[in-house]
Image (cartoon, rainbow, N blue to C red; front, side):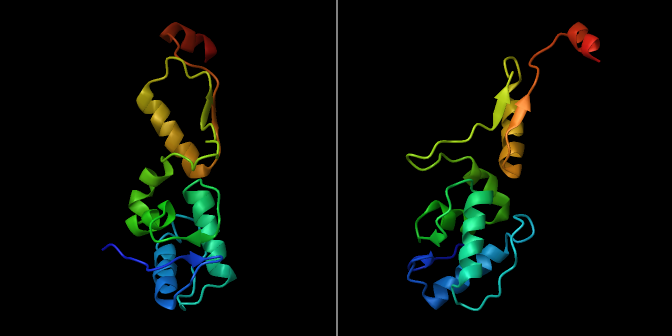
Length: 146
């Protein structure tokens, strides 16, 4: 079920109690998979709620955290979509002016695109680049390395 908030929640936001309650509830749905501390759903936007928003933005969306959620931004869309859909949002482009982190670096020539996509997802999940030390090898080359 898609939820809606009427105004911004978080640092410098309007923080309407009903909206804060929705955001806190949605953030809690990511507590286990997103390594977030579960919030007390009290409809009050304090330091813990702002910190949870920032952690969600940084670690799960890989965007520059601003500790604020607006009704029509990527953070609220990702929260609303739920933990199972998060991989879609983590692949979106960074905001203008923010450089995308290289996720898979090194010798990727000849590596199957499906494998590179999988490596990118793993890298995004753990928020660390993966270095490929060798690309495509013949069976004989692989035997020599082993």
